Amino acid sequence: MTLWRWAECTRDELRAILPDGIVVLPIGATEQHGPHLATGTDALLAGTVAERAALVAATTSARDLVLAPCLAFGASDHHLPFGGTLSLSSETMTSVLTDLGRSVAEDGGRRLVLVNGHGGNRGVCHAAAATLSARHGMIVAIVHYWELLAAPADGTPVPGHAGEFETSMVLAVRPELVRERGQRPAIPPESAVEGVDVHDAGAWRRIDGYTDEPERANATRGNAWLEECVTELAGRLGELGGAL
Image 1 (cartoon, rainbow, N blue to C red):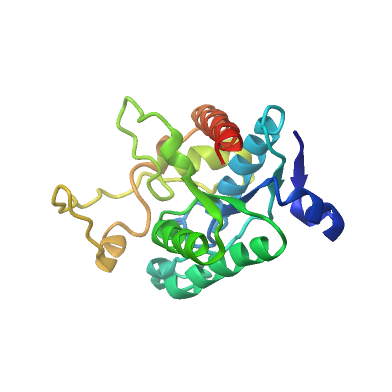
Image 2 (image 1 turned 90 degrees about the vertical axis):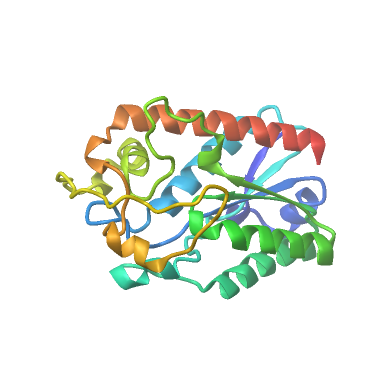
């Protein structure tokens, strides 16, 4: 089938495509990524992975794919103390995703895939998807793109935050957005309880707002991760085309 870009289509084209098509909506954030990485990292990576995967998947998909513009803002209140962050509250972000999905439904669409690139969007994606399914009869799938990767054998945290993984990915896509990386100070050990999710705003301050070792990042590894993400997401989009 065909990959269509929502922003380049006319209303009549979308009216014809949407009832049987799948809308792919990349979601990122604009937030601090330590002293070395651009604030648009999450939107850049989610948009890049989603677009490249949709291009591949469209060649074999049983349905047309419609790539929506990347949503460049997310639920990032936990990064506000560092500056450089444009955040929507979790309540607003849930409403934004619900409104965008409702718009797709009003336009005739019934299938939506959210390609998320920011850990802070996890909860709001699932809340919005549940609402859209219950209220508007939509089928909504959610993919956190980094979860498509096999766990690195050397234990590199994926995705981390502005650490080796994200920094390598940006080096592969837009290397000019990576600033000088010095040896970072020792990271305090985490206090974690197995099987329990803990939200602690102070944890981000203790690690200066970024994780692991970005100084180890390189474009070669970033390209390998990027290709794996694209290949795996393309496969999932193809499967969804036959299943939804």
